[in-house]
Image 1 (spheres, helix red, strand yellow):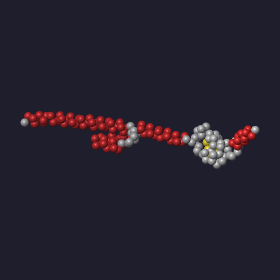
Image 2 (cartoon, protein in one colour):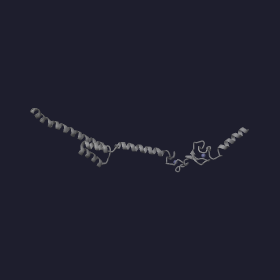
Image 3 (cartoon, protein in one colour):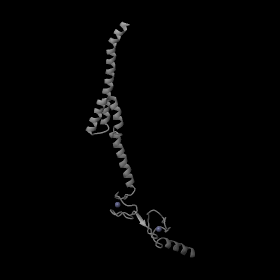
Image 4 (tube, helix red, strand yellow):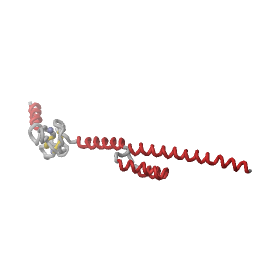
Length: 165
Ligand SMILES: [Zn+2]
Ligand SMILES: [Zn+2]
């Protein structure tokens, strides 16, 4: 019995040393990981120092606190998101640009105010803005080519004349 106790007294310091060195290795690894992680998430030196300090002081509890409080996105993720948002915004704005000079216009413009390209035309019947390619006004059914007379009726008249002859 005394022999076993004596042996335990010899072994205990070694076990203690192994456990404490294991903890120290994990602690250092946690510090290195925190240092790398916070560098990928912010360029603010104060936040970087605070993050590493909280893990240094509180150890694993500090690591948990850091994981809860750290910036949600890495700098690369943030950059990609901002890039995406810029593209989306440009797509929306692109819907109303002059096809000739690429400058911003309002959807109801009939003429580009910068380069005077014809964009749309005003309907001869109801004066609403309609597309240049439409054959008929979708609001009042006036055929393309203006009011009630210019291009449509002469065609009918010619056809009638042909039929009469
Ligand atoms: Zn233009
Ligand atoms: Zn019309």
